[in-house]
Image (cartoon, rainbow, N blue to C red; front, top):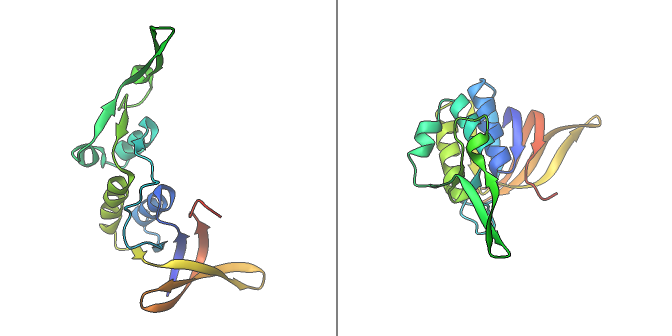
Length: 164
């Protein structure tokens, strides 16, 4: 398989990159080693800057239609007195709150949006095991899948697995 961009890792960075590239017409494959996005270690906060990006992409309303909670401010108690730790009402963004949503729901949403664009391909259960090098340049990745070994060549390879 050959793509313009291969992204190793289907977390927030990899999935968002896949969506943005596919929207721009770039043939992109995102490889995620798990069968789904359901993991306990994932975060549950979608920050106002990310919500602003979703607005700019025209998908904020669809995102906010999904079950979520909104945190507009955070207050703590110091010596028995309430102290405002964070107040999002002053942010120069459309959404002046942090959205609380399980990250797997966020990633499922981004994947669904990305799939609307033909250049996007999400390959689940694809554990990237190595890089393909040609004349001193990284030109692809190798992965293990339930169907066997997979080799993807690419004009650009992005490591977005967050761990190495």
